Amino acid sequence: MDNKAIFKKLWSYVKPYYSRLLWAVACMIGVALFTTASMWILKYVIDRIFIEKNIRMLLMIVLGLPLIFLLKGICSYGQGYLMSYIGQKIVLDLRNDLFAHYHQKLSLDYFENKRTGSIISRITNDVGIIQNAVSSGLVSLVKDGLTIIGLIALMFFLHWRFALYTLIFSPFIIYVLAIFGKKLRRVSTESQQKTADIYSILIETISGIKIVKAFCSEDREINRFERENRDFFNITMRSMRVISLSPPLMEFIGVLGSTIFVWYGGTEVIRGYWTAGAFFSFVGAALSTYTPIKSFSNTNAVLQQTIAASERIFKVLATEPTVMEAPDAIALPLLQKDIVFKKVSFTYDTDDTEQVLSDIDLVVKTGEIIAIVGPSGSGKTTLVNLIPRFYDPTAGTLMMDGNDLKRVTLASLRNQIGIVTQETILFSDTVRNNIAYGSPQATDKEIVKAAKAANAHSFITAMDQGYETLIRDRGINLSGGERQRIAMARAILKDPRILILDEATSALDSESEQIVQEALDQLMMRRTTFIIAHRLSTIRKADKIVVLEKGRIVDIGKHQELLNRCGLYKKLHEIQFRD
Image (tube, one colour):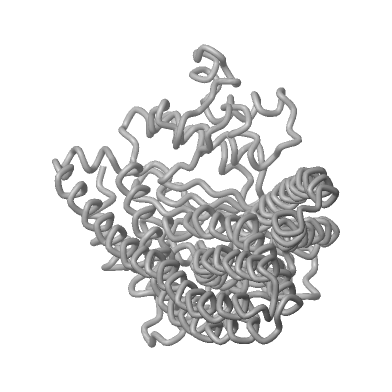
């Protein structure tokens, strides 16, 4: 994105608070005017008081100065508060939009191709940079800009020729800002990317701390973090070199111009071409411009960081999902007849010629239990992920009761599907809310009924707070079997027409598996079920067993039939499914 497009998008977030922005700008104008007025008064202090001995003017200035600085303070407070309000509201809106875009619009493949640290960095670090730019950088840009304009106007009023001489050095300052700005933007982009790397390491090592300790890899992970942190330090110091060099360089340019002006201006006063008061008022105004000009260098640093952060944020918001709902999508009626895969093929990368699934033809009648088996990498999980439209087929058609799934609404499709996987996902909330996650309107009676059906009620009620017990991060205070049974209860409460079980019991011990299997049997009753399993007991219950190899269906049948005629199934049975 070019700068114009970035600022246009940023303005769309500022625009809702336009009235507050106008008041803030009015306060900034007040600060600039009162700053200029204080320099203007200096002329009268010298000419009318110290030279002409005018006691009346002394009284007016004594009464006027406190009032000027009081009004300046009120305006300064107003612009500071209002701009902070606008900055915080922009952060609120941007974070809400990013979170909603991540969860509601972007497809599953986006998250599989992006690091978690990079995603978190957008919502935290990048948005925070924009907030700082609005609440402080924009204030400096407008307030200091108006102050410079007011002071320059005063300089032209006092002596237009010397004002022109003073402005000769402006192109040098602008040139310095432009050069430093390019460097800062490049370094800022690197810094934000490195922040994402650090977030990724933190997430990986904290969530996988058990594996780190089990493999005695603490030192290796510490070294990896220190290496990334050192790279971040080096990048930060590169930016600080630029940021630290800019103000003194511009200050030197300013002082150089001032000394030349003082020499020529002082000789003009000695010759009587203008008054001492006007001269010192001019000098005061000229020197006062260098403070806001010097702060422009810091503002420029913030601006370049903001451009880099905004570009990363708006790139995410502009990302289109690969799975999109058709504009004329219809609500999918409840499944009554069948699910049909017709010449379905799929590849994760459109440029990749190797297909994950190829020419899948499969008809599943409502209420059937379908087991999907095959070697690792044969496409089992990919096949079932097409049903809730986590991905769309790259060729062929997937239909329910004759409705192409690409022509129905995602909500009406996914509301009919329950999924239980090997990796059970629980949220940091109560047991009750975790069970009711897909059915927030469920009554306590319905929740308890679902828990009983999942063989979870007994261990839930044995907890200190029962259904109100808080599940800690990722369910760490529960056993694997308990987590899985809560996930089963969640699926039972949803009462889906279609059930997908992706190796739901493969990570459990024999005792837990038996309890969970009883819950699974309850869950599968009268539902169209797709099972990916490593257990023979589960597969024997299937109405059909689909054997996959390298993304193709090599055979379909019942257990004994496949043992007799399918060499691959017999081999899998001997390796994986023996009791």
